[in-house]
Amino acid sequence: MLSLLNMSGNLPPKVPHAFDAEYLAAVQTVLSRQSPNDLIGAHQFRGKQRDRIAGARFVGRRLPVAPNPDQLIVTNGTQGAITMLMAGLIGRGGTLAIEELSYPTMRQFAEMFGIGLCSIPMDKEGMLPDAYEAACRIKNPAAVYAMPTLQNPTTAIMSVDRRRNIADISRKYGVSIIEDDIYSLLPFDLPPPLSAFAPEISWYILGTAKSMAAALKVAYLVAPSAEAAQSRFWPGVRATYWMCAPINAATVTALIENDAADRIIAAVRRETQARQALVTERLRHREFNSIAEGLHVWLKLPASQPRAEFVARVRSRGVEISASDTYFFGKDEPPNAIRFGTGTAPDREAFERGLDAVIRAYDA
Ligand SMILES: Cc1ncc(COP(=O)(O)O)c(C=O)c1O
Image 1 (cartoon, rainbow, N blue to C red):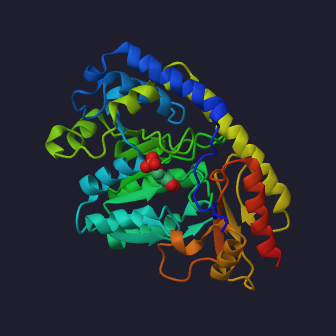
Image 2 (image 1 turned 45 degrees about the vertical axis):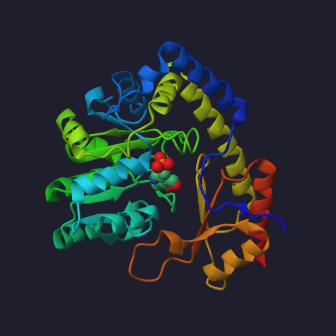
């Protein structure tokens, strides 16, 4: 039997022509610069100074003011950063506000830490300010998980006004912002992060998994202050699971320092644009949300096509996609929509085949 083509994930496309030589050179640079045992011999809680300086430069691509490297924490990925923040900022019995369609893993983390979720209704820009404010008043969340830039799964991008509004409400009710900006490095001309509007209450995370390679295992976390970074991420927390392996941190540092990160991101962007051009051309006349540099497409289905049946029909054509239910944190019925990724197909030909299966199921 032919194996299923996985288009339910939204990893960046592989770009070995650009990635391989740069990565190899970076690893060689790292290993020639320092004794391996010296590099790996001890835990570095917030990351080595050189890695935090590179991280500050990297997040400076998005934040209007590059942070002090002492505010930076080098983590082994966005999930590692999020779990530390959920445990540290919210804790058992506390509440996290989250958009009603969002990153599904947040549900597992909430269960793991005994944290309640309160879902916030959305429009095309993401969470609605009035609904968010009402939730802050009634449910008293300690933090909000926000993905205001190319939201997963809807692709929503908050306007500057909306960001300012959400930041003001968070400040008014003392709600910490956990901002996941993981999809922000491929598109152009984006608004600044939400955290830029309330830096004193924001924990800003910029991972590399969606712009360079899914398993690089490096994400930079910017704390509201150097003191906050230190008090949440120090040996006294007695946890190291979120820490980046020093070889990974140092390799990404080398990629940032010689601008190889830019070249890899540009290659991922080019391949994504080529695949999204196919989406725009082939899906025209159907209702969908995506942008030219987006790793996922949100396709709305007509009432005559219930999403579960649609997903099954696409699957029968050998392609895996996911229904809106996967991402739904709300109380009522999820919207009749599906998400598929543009990057997981191993090459453009396979992607076209997957896209074709989606279109044929839609038109059936
Ligand atoms: C919104 C979002 N955040 C984080 C991640 C995972 O990031 P990392 O691999 O850096 O933990 C994903 C991956 O699917 C994601 O969609």
